[in-house]
Amino acid sequence: MTTSADDRAISLRPPSKVMRLERMGCFHQTRLSFMRSLLRLLADQGWHFSRDRWEVDARGVGLATYRATGPERCYSLVCLAHELPPEKRSDRVIATAWDATFTLFDGIPGQDDIQRLEKQIPLQEAGHCSQTELILARANRSVRLFEHVVQALASGKQPDRERIEQVGYLMRTTAVYGNGKFGISDRERIAQRPEFSAPFHCELLAVWLIRWFTVEIAEHLARSAGGDGAVKMNPDLRRRLGVGNSTGLGMAPFLVLHPALIHRWIMARETALLRVRRLEWCREHVRERFADLVLRMQAGVRKWHTVNKRQRARIEGLKEGLDSLYGHVMSGALDRAYPWDGMIRWSEQHLTIEGQELLVTLVIEPHADLVDDLSAQMSVDENEYLAIDGSMPLARLKDLIGRNYQWALAIDYQEKDQSSRFWYYSEEKLEPRVGERYEEPGADKEHPLAYGRDVKHLARHLDLFMSRHGDSVPAARFLRFHPEHRHSVRRVQITSVLDYAEIRDNLIGADMVPVDLLRCKLSFFGASCFDPRSDRWVRINMYQHAPFPDEFDWFRDDDWIYPRLA
Image 1: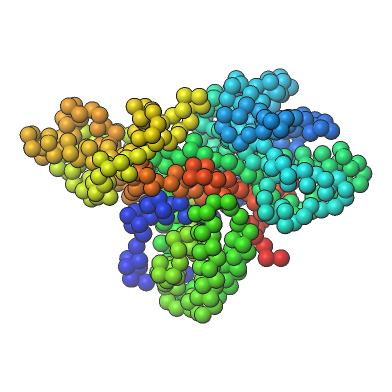
Image 2: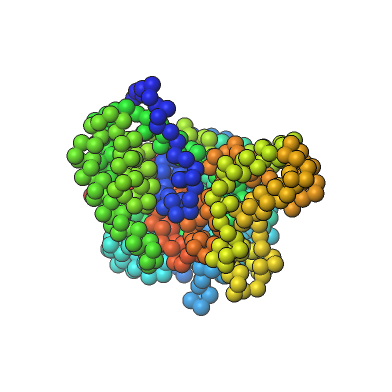
């Protein structure tokens, strides 16, 4: 792999292009996504997995525990299966009963721990947790598929492959909590452990083990119903099942509230793309691998179902785009100098935004040796960016606003369409919500996520202050008189050193689609099969096609997320 002296002509994509909601809402997983980096790390460190306890009765009610054992420590997933009446089945965060509840326990729970967890974990946020509980989660069955799988296995047959692929999971989680919420362990306790130093590795380890449980409880119920005539699921068919997830607005503000972290995530992704674009030539085996990935992605997109009209239109465009992409590859596009750069430039003229961002994923995929080190650069100590530089002259602050917030200054927030939404936290669940400013009460409790509007207010007050006191006055003096602008000054200063820290769109405008925020974050988790159920919540699949823990010793396909053609 070589590069030329002209590398500098191929640059990072600018934040003015990347950090727009329409594009961020089209992001796909990459090999840097956290599910994939977690499984690579577990394999490299030689982790082993076992089921320690199975105390589930013929109704599917009881306890199971699974152990993950690494070089220095171990963790246990404690699973509690319940009998859930149909009238209590709900994916909403306000639900109080589920088919199964879980915690990831730090170490191996003793009998006293088990007795305590059996009482507290089914209560979820209403229960009493301790520092030994790292993750709190719950899940519901995908009823029709779950029952079909149980009935088929009980009768000695394999479930219908088409039905499995259409749904893609036996259970879907409705919440996976970490980082100190509801009394569980703070992230600071575990952040220095190698297995959890990357963002969300702890949560995603729990989800991967939950996936194992979802299949084993279905097989257990099949044995209970079918006796000796029951069979286990075929391993290849089993891998087509992931874990579903229903995600709403609870995670939407994350991208706004963690600017330094989001910069790290997107900088890693864009740097990976840049490294590949700067390659002068494409080797033959890489060319063949890329063509195979395009074909496999075509197969995956054909199985991508959604009820959402907006996403259906995107998928149709994606199907056409992948056909064009494969033809472009077969025409010799990768035989030219700087083929990957040429491919990206071609996509900007011939593919939809969804197609362009999927191509980013595909271009990065065959270059593990070039990009995988970036996985270690996706965490950050956010405290480093909290301090405001009070010595910064106001002229410099105003210049930074003009450089990075022209998009915000151009918006007239007095127009109803530009300020029609407001963000707030629900009193019942302390979860983020979006309200309609001119139709609903509650705007007086607005959460400060309208950073574009706030920066425009800051710019106006800076002009007034500088007209009276001069432009060399330090920011600290301005903030002494206008402390309401502290959060905006901090964001302006962060964005001046972290290019991808700020979404360059109006989060309170009428045309803002909240699900785009969810899609962006979930793509970094490694989610697939995005199915928006409205503009405010989405269903996804996690770990579909991945190896299971009980086959992890020999299954080493790192591109598992792309479905096999056979």
